[in-house]
Length: 478
Image 1 (cartoon, rainbow, N blue to C red):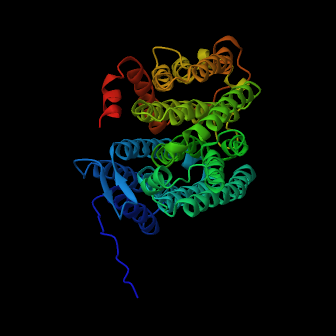
Image 2: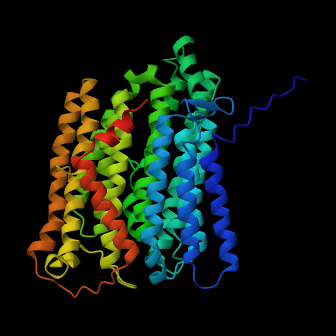
Image 3: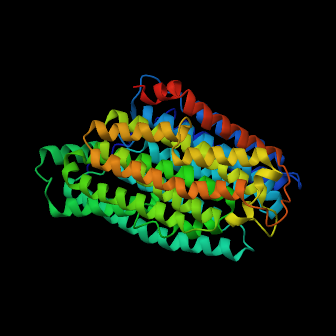
């Protein structure tokens, strides 16, 4: 019997995963032994995220391959790990007073965010389809519970159930696609798959092409690309608002990182086949997302469709698959984190227990009662629409430049037109804030933590728009 050789264990490469896992368990255990004051759990969670981000820098001379080529620490994974830690920290900060108001059990809430971050780090660092699947499952299971964590809220329960059922269905497609790739190439490692396609003459094998299609379906669900986006509006609306913001940034960034890595490293030889399909998906996603947002009267559903449209822009970076597109993807997701958490932070401030004020008409006259909040919301919405000199404009310009470099002129023109269309529904909210009379009183409790998140988000949105050079340099570093 041939002995099985275990891969070398490299715990330093796994440092962010181990640190976040330890702190996630620490939050759960600490929650059992403290009283009603749960503020120490916030401190433990934020400390874990800070140490997780720092530990991602433990390896030098990147890239470093570990676990028999199944895990990699490279520039992409390190940058995305920072994005994950930032988005998780903002999610925790914006949740502090919201959880008190809604009576959410914070011990499991904060630990689930940390465990979800573990899955996101695995997704961004995996170079083996088994590891990618493991990361997706950790992220998905955490989000299923977070979406339904308000147990007494029927909408939250409905959101969790819909997300779970559709997520399990999409996972089946993803796993079947991975199986077909393995059956066609004889390996689950991305590098070996690319080598088998390049040297083995299997590029046109029907099973391989079917596997690629199924991968697009499975990953398309995870990033909410059309036509696999049907879960997003209902889940975004029903989930607790901080969870909605978290879902729109961290897990989506992780799925896009895995999406990019698979298609740029494992199957670039098949790009003539999947480029056309992804171009169609990108265009339809942009149109459906923007047109769907125009028809919404609920702010969370509007932002859900807006998020769908942004996925259409981000898929362009995957299609381009050059060195500029990877850095564009990283920069876009960093700016998107600030824009989304700032927007949802204001949505949280305007809500109260039993009435979250989610209808757009409830924002009428906000500029007269709370001009600073209205101005902040305007900055975030205009940045999401891609107006200069804000961060959203630079992020879109970066992505479109990567596509133009590869000759996708028509796709970029369509994306620019869609970006212009998106300004309509962003401006609609601004019109309500500045040009409509209030329909109800604003009963706002100014939460210090939420205001802190909004302030950080404003700084990030303006800073990355006017002075993006340093972050772009980091994103482009090799």
